[in-house]
Amino acid sequence: MKRPLNDEAPCTKPTRGRGGSAAFLLAQIGSHAASRFAARLADLELIPAQAGVLRILAATPAITQQALATALGTLPSRLVAIIDELESKGLLQRGARESDRRSYALHLTEKGISTLQAIGKVAREHQHSLLAALSEDEQTALADLLQRVADEQGLTRGVHPGFGVNRPEGPSK
View: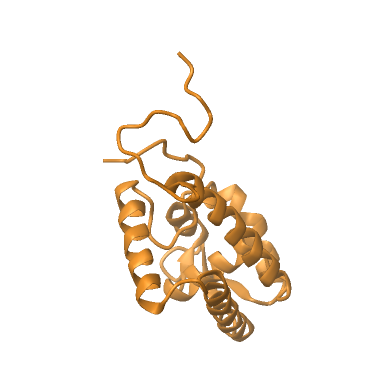
């Protein structure tokens, strides 16, 4: 039996507000937020994947490409083009690791650090614009609720699922 594709689909626990189901609204706002953030990053001549890599490099200096790919849940070959582009822009550099000269450690350059600061400013402006309808307390409550949902779904904190090779169908418990 096929399940209807409308908002009236049966479910065990209704989560509808005035605008539709919570799942639909999350998808709608997520898509809107992602496209708006990408547009804001374009002013810095970056795409979201590049901004995400820079953020992780700042938090994990000297990480290898292999370890970065593992952290992102993506194939190392998919990451090579992103790393190459960031290196060509002067935002990061590859350096031989002392412990294993066959692999390279990734480091942000001074330009990469200043670019990351610009990304942070863009992200703050984006969040302010996106959540302008909510009070500060409501924004905190929303973030807490969404983090609980993300945790229950087995999503890795701080890693956008768009990087992933395998997209989980549900909780990974």
